[in-house]
Length: 332
Image (cartoon, rainbow, N blue to C red):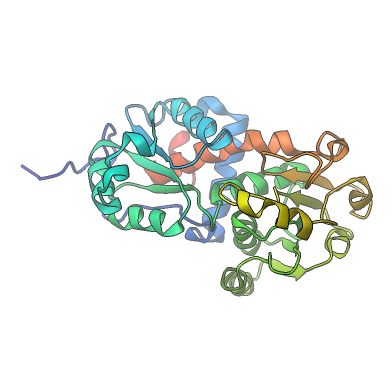
């Protein structure tokens, strides 16, 4: 008898020799991103097509930090696909008592069909993926937030028909969300203008690699950096804000508030954008800091559509990674 099942637990799907993971946006190419977005739009328009498609499967969800959107959207997506979602906290796992990440990945691969993890160090996710024999999804690390970027691009496509050749102005901290948007810009063909104060720019290596990918794919993607939020939003099709102080940075709050003074997205800043510009925010929002109520609650805001699209993009992502049906051919 074989020492391990040749199928994913609970599913009539062969266990892949090399599972597909989604740790960063550039784990897919431009064709793969397009396939995920097409599946996402279909999931939103035709939810019945996906209902129960992974019935019998199990989704493990490790949360090393609190979550609202990520926790609920992944759990809802799993249920819609017919999977059992299992949320796991550090105090419920032997990870918190010294078991290695690699051993945890090997064991969970025998029980689960896929695994998501929301944590701090990106290396922790990479180590899980190296040792797992099931798909691993990065649900957020300090360096990347690829699932958020999927929902962001989907929301731009809903607003404009296509994200290609559009300009997204990102005003604020060059953080994990910014990094994933830079990678998405290269694959989806839009310009990302990042306005950050000195010392808070996105990681140079990630930007450099994204720019190289944009040139390689030749779809019109660009990443531009500035310290001037007014220059960033001039004529932009969309403006994106995120919190100035993320989880784990509480000790820096006063310094960050001082550094980001002048980077608030208010009505005056939005008035400098293109005529049909939209506003995006990954949430949670610190109202009165990075954005004012009049913008996030105003007619340009697509924030709630953006939050909803986390569900549809994650459902599509789980379906594609687990089934291998990236084009949706088995959906009928």
